[in-house]
Image (cartoon, rainbow, N blue to C red; front, side):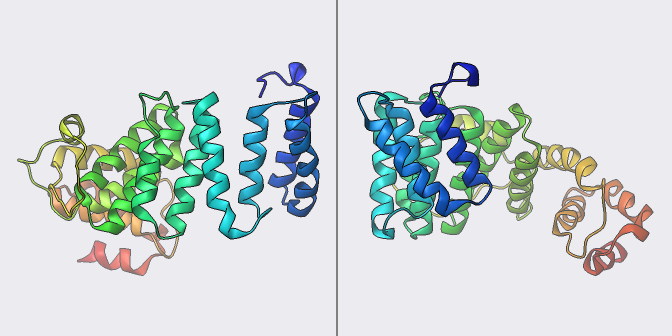
Length: 276
């Protein structure tokens, strides 16, 4: 769609109205409105293949068809965009939606195959790549394949960091740290080294490589200012990870900061950990 609303066609403007309706929760009204838009996108007067793909994808996700047809419709959108808009944000979004559909159906290997089509070589933007790597890592964790999961968490973090996506960067870092603290070894390769030598595997498996303490320290140093800006909350597992990291690295000042602000902490388990 046009990046300038003043240059947008009537169909583009109406499609924006449809997306606004969805964001406001007007699902039934949006379905009715989008049916007319879909007809227009296929007409000789207003034909627009990109808008048709976007409309079909959105309509599939909000229940315009039987559940059994959703996967087929999302695959159609991916194939169409693969042909006319490879590597675009919309193409990446279509792949993400198809991968998530497979994940929700319990088809983890199919989801991983779809996620593999979101990559730097195809030109997908960093935000889309980051979301894909984050979901890929979570699937691998569920499968018990932790070495590649850690690599994908780290890659997701780098993608989000480059785009200034603070919340997503925080989530990726915490999920990586949660795995990394299972074993920390000063002889272990850094995450960047692991990413550089990684190669596709013909079959999956349950693999593990310990985390390098420098990577752990760097992550925690990034997390501390954000997580400790507010110590309230009755369940602060994120701060518990910081304490665990301090124990693993024999670093005391992270816990000392929390001890000095103990009156702000509401998580009883966290207080107990600081006292032990």
